[in-house]
Image (cartoon, rainbow, N blue to C red; front, top):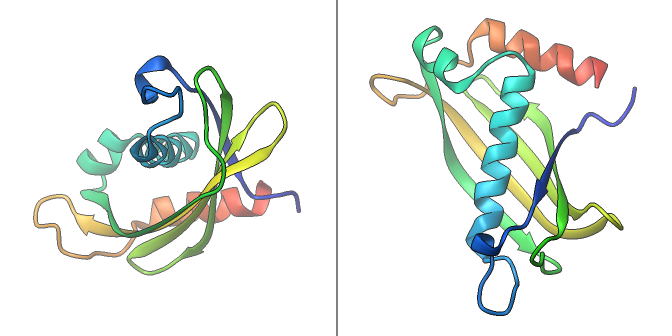
Length: 141
């Protein structure tokens, strides 16, 4: 089996940086969130469909970020998404932000994401169709 990681390319723009041309730390959270959303889309589940048809949304329950090296203006990045655990009502994401040119590790992120009802925000099981798509992806990635 190959490496079960989803990868999303991204470029650092001027708006992402501070006065020194270094990416602002909170942008790593935005980039990783976007990569998780694109991973879900690659599985065939846009956020609107998950909400409207499956009646659930995902919410971050905990987050741990380790910053290693700075991303800088105009860097091309690779945001990796791995899902080592799919629980009954939660997922564990492990993500890496890499500089694409040399694969330098810039940041790591671990996020526990809960599946909750779209109307009441109470924990609920990950829908079967979504769970099956996640399992298929893990087996074929």
